[in-house]
Image (cartoon, rainbow, N blue to C red; front, side, top):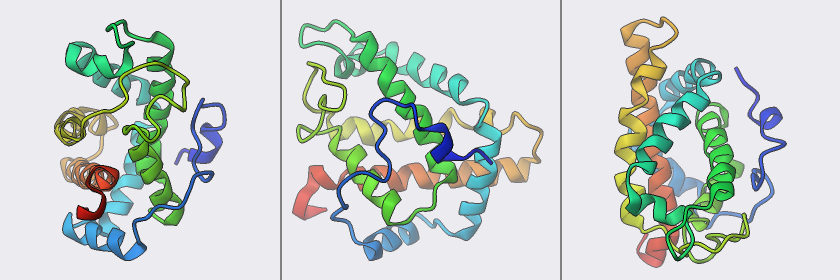
Length: 198
């Protein structure tokens, strides 16, 4: 299994383990996990997925970036206010996005992980959007796009999970665990948007 910490040292703006504490309680996290039916079997399936995806991360990102790049309304959040894409910003985010794939599969969903989910969330809102990379872009990614992005980020994953010869049952277990985890994380990312209503 890839070592998430070892592979992340040179990623600009990646601050796992060095961010503020999440306002979400461990009990709230446990309740969310129960709500998406995420359990030990899913943790095990994600660990297997981490091995399967380790050498496919760039291919996954090519797929996702191709999707985003084909929709100007999504590219706008990585562009100047005049609409010019910021290549360095896209590249820096890509590095963190790739690490997110590995983190999703290999990290323990503990307090440190929960804290970093809050950091990811804030980086989509005016509280921290653009700060990490020092860019002048739109100050907010609307929550509707985080929610909508659940589908492309999950639906496109199955072929990558099936690429190493695992049985259909194993692939389905990895895929279901991935879907649950992405849904769980987006629910956590909604916290700064919903504030007290969360």
